[in-house]
Length: 479
Image 1 (cartoon, rainbow, N blue to C red):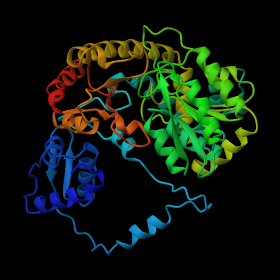
Image 2 (cartoon, rainbow, N blue to C red):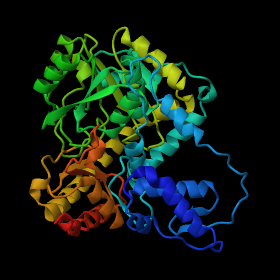
Image 3 (spheres, one colour):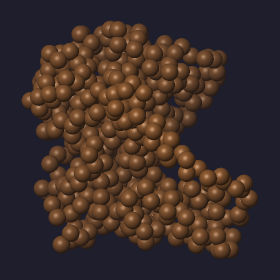
């Protein structure tokens, strides 16, 4: 049962088994259910979430999941009609024939908690022990005392926070070139909808962040993959893709690319910009890892937008990755008339980011502790990278890692050609290790012969080392 569309079937099977149990009976663990149904962790999580909504089960952190007192629910009417209606409305009304979709499985999988019986080598957010809790608490308290915290902020964002982002991004940007948005994913979705029409092609990295793929599909865009090398998107193939598709939009991650870890040099950035200018196209620069440099990282190239007076680049910057998944504050920066288009799309999508959250972010980044917290994080990420790299090389061999990026929070790990990445990820979860199948990073979802390992979300370096080494016996799975 490997198709994640079967989570409802799993839920029904479990519901029939759980219903006769006495209240307080402990049910099978997430890991045991993955093994039993040969399903992904996302499938089991969705099934358990449905049973929780029905009142059949409840989870107790650190203890497990238990049968609860059944609650009376009204009889649910037949909703089968919805399937046909949703299928009909999947086509965009513009007549382009390009269906919009909501491919959230890969993104939702990154948000699935590991559970008490698995080590999280999948998540993209800092473990609580790495988050600057004291600074966040102080910032939230100070922000709440400001009178404007509970007033409606300007649609473009709190002016002082826009000023900070403009100065931080550089390139002579000003307040009016910056929009405050709800972190990176929100900014990416808004930018894609603002800059392209349903049915348009958008050039993306191959492989790339699943949220980029999901946002493009949700906007009704046709994602066209462009392969990478060690410095990111290949200029020769980008040129060909622009010419072949007549695309007017590309999305790149220039710094510690997710999932490969590739970094663009300043020279490569200039090549990408020159190609985009020739084709009169926009480049969305997803600078998600700017604050995730490791303690031993060389100085990275400046953002692409800093060398772009002509307005080709739409820049995305977020504060979520180096702080907390709950500080969902980021910025969209651009030059020229495109700012008005982005602002209009942003207002339609979210109206505005709550003032209290913006002011909390402002307190965080303007406090003396901000730079200190980044240095502390840089040292911790370096140590975790070294531990993870050593464990991977000992378990999979040095050839499994093409890149060892000194920034970000992940490694792109090659599997032996006899293995299937989705089956390997499912087997890893059954062994108590959550990681991400490489197929999630391609629009076609084909076997990528890679998995991504994240070392930011696990409790400790010791847990990471043990979890990676636990994968060793799975390498014989395809023999």
